Length: 62
Image (cartoon, rainbow, N blue to C red; front, side, top):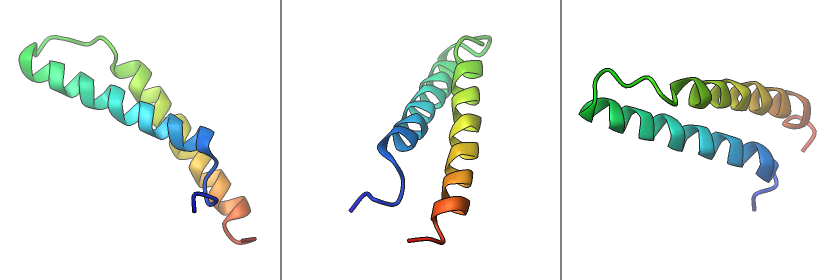
């Protein structure tokens, strides 16, 4: 179990999701807050590109 996606790629997705979730939680309390969205967004984009390439290249092999 867990052989489909490498742990590094999975952790990037988890960290990105947590950062974006924290950002939107803070945004509910302080509507003008713009702190960590860029970092979470960039990590989310990186995760999507990596997971897409990984599944395209290695998803058909296994």
